[in-house]
Length: 188
Image (cartoon, rainbow, N blue to C red):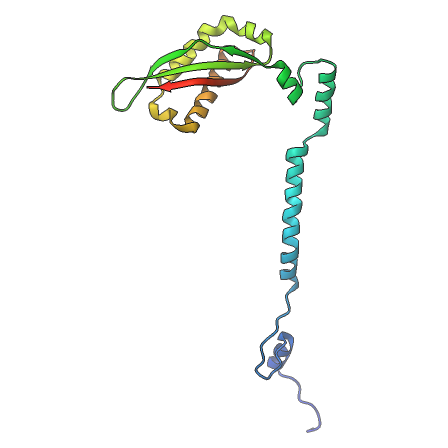
């Protein structure tokens, strides 16, 4: 029985799998399949997702672009592509707005605005003229409730633009105003 080789112990099997030469040498680990998949697959996945996102943002739906191009070629309105947007934009200047606003310290503060409305057509500009007293009333009522702090920074002017747009669209419905442009804003 001495000539039979001893069965390896569990420790020896583990050492052999880890690449240990049993003489105090360093262990050489083989990369696992999971790690190899992560290091190779993750960058590929990120690149593919980035490509899909870029295609969706930049490529868009070609069907809408073809329909817009065809509508522009036939002179039809209603397209919302760059060619139709430039051809159909009309600007309507509002009278200057001067309103006193609230301040925390009790001293009088004023806001002066010069506003322009962006519309779809000349017909829309003519359609909103009778509603201008209602628009100005809504603007004045809203502006009087503002505080100086509400208008601070670019976020304040952005919120102001959105609120004015919402109010003008309610006042002139069914006509739709595309945007309220603030040409001048003076807070004193």
